[in-house]
Length: 445
Image (cartoon, rainbow, N blue to C red; front, side, top):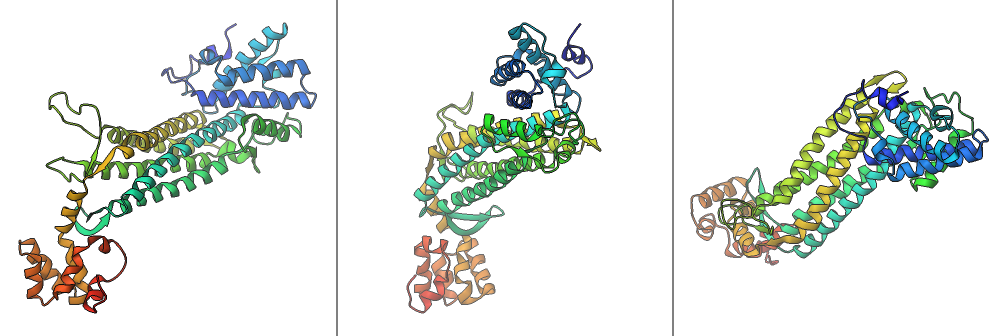
């Protein structure tokens, strides 16, 4: 007779999308922990428990991936994946023992798909989020190093893509580093929630058909074997019927993707040119940017990262929809949630890592160009506003925009020469204070 997984394939979708490796690992680790707990409780014969646990670890390591044949788009509880794994483990354990190990009676003892898959999805997501954290930390460090090196590099500020007061390149980069640090705090908080798992809740969260000590032992085994701080959920029903903790993790990935997009957009603008754009930095890319225009280079890594981020935004919405599926005692979006979080983690970590490794170290600031643009900014008249008032400063700005030299226009408005000289050191204008008033009082600029 054909296996459950083989028979079920005819009723699931056949998209060629298989459960991610991380999720198969997680289901294998759950089966390992369950077998160990059941054996300790005397519910499984020691040799049967040992055989199941051994094969489960092999499955977690990837030895039987070719035999996981169900599609991601299957029954909402993930029963197809759970039974597929049960049957593979039972078959291999039976061969090892020389007698039958049953996929339901033995491998699935004290379990239901309804607590196994919600646990496995969270286990896989928690593990992959650690990789995302490391990648984003690499990007933060790369940005901080460059920000420190360019702390005094003055450039024009822009708001609404129009002239604004000068800033330093270091300040701009530090702002992105700080944003990503805040994103990491959100990521860590989300991971702290998803490690609360419902293993032991069995079919509806009540724990029927499981030994009273089974949840504690199984979760303890799971934590020990995975190295993750897995703990029992206070309410096992909550993570079985609701995926909002997983949605919070997806939201953290979306936040990181938003900040990566903004960073990439800004760097592309500063890199535009070299002769007809901003031309403030050169992002070195040692590959041709055009099949037709010789010598052209493009910020290809930034553009690839922006496309990945765009995909994350769509996946985050998919995660939202998955969280809404289901009613009463069970979520119906578990397989989709597991797949979605896996893809988000892959995209975000790869984008962050590549920008940290390939883009940030290759940035070559064109300091003279930036300083020249900053000196020509119409917004510099803002410095004089505390001295001559907003309306007079606005008239000065209008004269400058028509081509009148600053010194001539300022003189007509009665601005002392020593005050005009405060613009000679633009770096001072990137700091708090009132340089024009200080100069008027003879305190220096």
